[in-house]
Image (cartoon, rainbow, N blue to C red):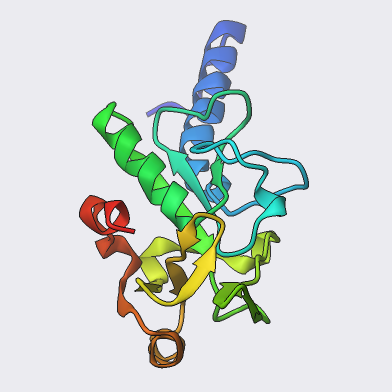
Amino acid sequence: MSDYAPALTRRQFVVGTATVVSLSGCLGASEEMEPVSIESGQNCDQCGMVIDQHPGPTGQTYYQDNTPEGHDPPARFCSTTCTYRHRFAKEQSGWTPAETFLTDYSTTDYETQTDGGKAIISRHLGREAFASTETLTVVASSDVEGAMGTAIVPFSDSADAESFAEEYGGQTLPAEDITRELVGGM
């Protein structure tokens, strides 16, 4: 066995380096799928409303091989209802959701106020206010409204969701169990 190792050619070095960089980009994709702050004036990718002008929970979705029209990912939404409607519509078009984030009311100092006899829940748009749907329990069909009417209100602590449902009505379920039928009936 020889201690001699042939030197890499420039081409071998460049191709090898490019491969490592490409693979590290693929491996790092999950790190890029984190919630972002929703900025003033940004529009909902489902209905077009200006997100920061409306109350209630909001959402963001990253898709595996697709991006929203007109801006970098994630797709952003004025409500949980628009988040799910967009996901369901895009899934029918062949888009695959990679990660969805919703406002986590267990981590925010939220308020509800009465407006015209209806309870309306506050909005929270900073990146720290969002959590993955994989970790959330939602309250659906409560007496609380957001941007698109009756809000689907998410919580990372299921006890918070149960307490919210006791106060405002509705049913609790895992955020991943929201169906097209449930959203369509709201």
